[in-house]
Length: 399
Image (cartoon, rainbow, N blue to C red):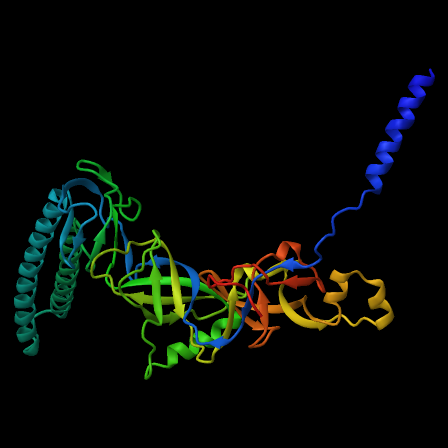
């Protein structure tokens, strides 16, 4: 029992001695890299999601019923205005047209006969050589014959129109889609969808902006005397740059009262056929800022609760009295009354992101030394050092 007690006391003494052993001093300075900020002119684009649209697009619907007897185009190809696309069985409409023509000829013959009879009775009536009743009947018969001819002419026009509608033509130059009907399929007027034709050159590109940005785009639309080169460019779905630039075509008539947004339409040439209706793309609007701006690395910006901050290095001096110096060890005394760097947190307003950098609108000024790394170890007022740190340009970090 005594032996166990002695071992316990011995172990406790060892632990107490280990706890009392002097710990190595902790360096209070956080190593960082600094970047001295200067104003510079920058080139950037505001990027806005957009969708391609056709300036003209029509859904082809048959105007007469019947079976499809001909398809005369290649699906997905470019068609010309007036090009023959579909043919609907025209035999019934051709027969109706021929019958209407025949009826018109009969009506015209009756009109000739009625005109001759009327002329005869008019002559006889002048000399009171015919009954008044016969004269009146002749005049009425003539008028009825004239009306019959007009009705027959209208019947011919209707039959001819139906015969024309039996063939469907391209309404304008554009690209035709996949046919929704095949040979032999019966179609109904105004119901069955045949196909869709959309114009393809030029192509519209629509995007939505907040109403706050509307004056900016109105100025761009009205400033046609001094257009900016490459004002509107576009990134395709694979993130490649479209080779042609665009221009403002239309600003929608009204702002959506629910969302406070409005649609802007650009027009891009589509000579190579790279654009298709409904494509998702990104419109790039060339910045119009001509004044130099402050740019810092994006990694130097810290977000906290929706607000943005950067750390700026500030010079400070640790003032120590003579009595206090005597109490400090040699290392601490050597650091006293020397200029030191501390990190100061600054709230900033950020602007456009440009690659790995970001524009700072306010919160710092030219000449400030922004801390660009080691942010996870920083807090407001902490001492920092640039010793033995490699700067952003590849050299030693400095003041």
